[in-house]
Amino acid sequence: LTSVEGSPAVAARAQPHLSRFAAPVDVISAPFSDFLDTSRGPWDWVLLDGHHQGAATLAYVEQLLPQLAPTATVRIDDIRWSPDMLRAWRQLQRLPAFTVSVDMGMMGLLFRGRQQAPEGFELWPGFSIFV
Image 1 (cartoon, helix red, strand yellow):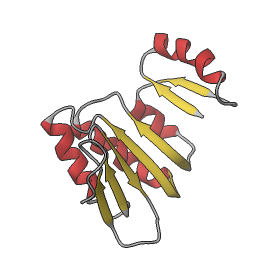
Image 2: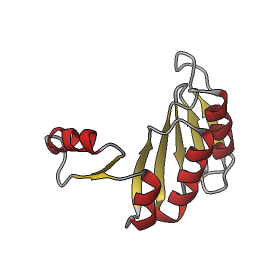
Image 3: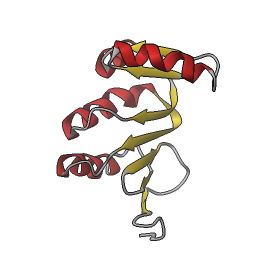
């Protein structure tokens, strides 16, 4: 488990908590884009949460793409934080690198390399609607 935290104080608090649930745990204090410049991948599962701007979210995913495992999952949190974030989510859903997207209201899942034609699911509101 690798956690990237922009705040050194939050990173210091996170390490002992995360270590109770997984081993080994690396908590890195750095801006996410700096981490991605030097990260080692391949990443199987990525959670993006923290920089709630559409342009930044798009840039992070673009930076991540070459480092993702062939069947990686990317979770984007707060996709409806703002109209800008929702626009970014809609763009991410159309990227050819992802074959399945799941819109769960406040978060979205992007799946890479699944053996099916590109498809999108919408599970909100109430997690009961498939589109």
